[in-house]
Amino acid sequence: MFLFAPPTLQAQVLTPPPTQAPTPGAALSLDLSGALSRARNENPMLRAAKARVDERRGLITSTRADALPQLTLVSDFTRVRDVSILNSSFAGSLSTFGLTPDSLVGTQSIYTNQANLTQPLYYWGKLGTAIDIARMGEKEATFSYTTSELDILHGVAKAYLAVLSAQAEQEVIETRRMTAEQFVSDVKARLEAQTATELDRLRAESELLAVIPDSLQADAQVKRAMEVLNGQLGLDPRTPIVLEGLGLPELKDKPAGAERSELAQLKQQEAMYRANEKIITSDLRPKFDLTASYGYQTDRTDSLFKEPYDTWKVSVTMKFPIFDGLRSSGKRAQNTAQLEQVKQSRIDRERSVAIEQSTADRDMTKAIALNEAARKAHDANLEALRMSRDAFDQGLITSLDLLIMERSERQAESQRRQAQLGLWAALFEQRRSVGLPPL
Image 1 (cartoon, one colour):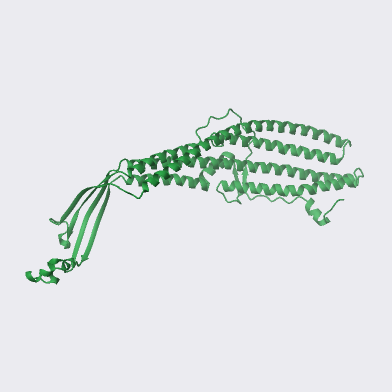
Image 2 (cartoon, helix red, strand yellow):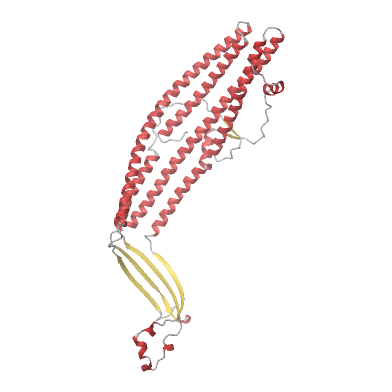
């Protein structure tokens, strides 16, 4: 039993939707290299990773400042009334000397202008090690940036392939729809000429109605893939883009690559934790600081910057920690545990990278075989379709048989294009496994 929509709905479904002409200059044309270049400059996550590198460079400057002399200029005005002398034993004998309490506790103004200098002298290598750790932090952030860049670029390449794959599927489905429409028209003409049956017409219209949902789904997949790619490129999701095709990749020997940035980053973190052990040890040893000051202090402004109102002080101070509440012991245990965590993470990552590389090599071999098989299958279906059209023209097969063969050829075309894009995807995965960008 067949179910049919009302005639008005059938007319809307069977009629192809009108195509809207794109606004001139509105679409952004990109090839794969242009998309990767734009992602390097516009991707928000990549900009954040780059800002992290700049942050670590600023940390080097601030850490180095702890080892340099600190110079401070101080200007101070103090007005004071000190009555502590009245609470001493001398206050009881004031009358003996003919003095009154008010004569000793009068209000006094003090003006001070001086320069203060502080300079760490010896910290058992703590300051130098802190600077070294800050520099290691910059390298670690650089490796993190490289990892983010590779992840984002390969994400853009995959999104680019996803758009091409969705568009290829959409083109195949649209070809099926146009073919089904042509067969509906042909069957109706044959029906009027009494060379076809009513069943042929119903089957042709059923095929056309069946391809409409696939066409809508393919259109939605294309739009979704473009929105994802726009997000990777730092564009508004609604920005129209036109992508160039890729063709067949040029297959060469497996690239040598370089050390994976993820492993280099973990190794750098290990070095940072080992260096931090030296800082923790230095906190338990004596430290020496130099402090110096020079300036003027007087109770009258006209005596400033004059002798003998100049004052100066130089001192060398030693601080020897005796007991810090086991704080340093806790820091050492924490640092040792963090070092072990990073070390085990590196070992696990090394194993994952080895598996990733071997898997990428196997996937490349499989993709090459699939591409060759899909190409041969498509050639066979093309020849079968040609023979079926000749047989249909001679009246040897029905329109339904020809429609089935047309669908088979379109599916083989879709598989051929998908296998070709799969070859690109396998190439990208292989390059990512050895720490290289897509191109």
